[in-house]
Image (tube, rainbow, N blue to C red; front, top):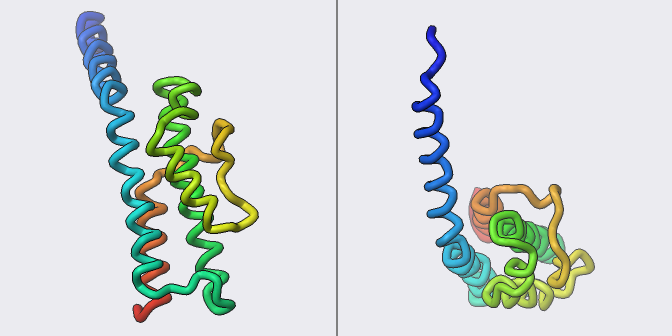
Length: 142
């Protein structure tokens, strides 16, 4: 198999750069939209009558808080990597989400004034699915 022509590589790399630029130009909006999911999840737990302070629900609360913290730190990491740490620390919707998670009052809450590290390079969507699965099993699923 012949090596690709150098012009093909340049065209490919320009396409990659264009895609990255497009994503970065919308990243703050994407993060803002994604921040709505954890907030809806917290509202659903409260509206569903889940007493997260009840002894039977402490494990559920702890897992919920951990997954929400993971989502928060992952979104912050995306912003920091693509747009810089200052934007990640000052993003209004993300900061609000961090403080909402803090209100769950668990010891391992997100550090809202620090930047995440490589441990937070996860898929936030998979954490949302974990929460939905957890809620389904805890409240009537099999």
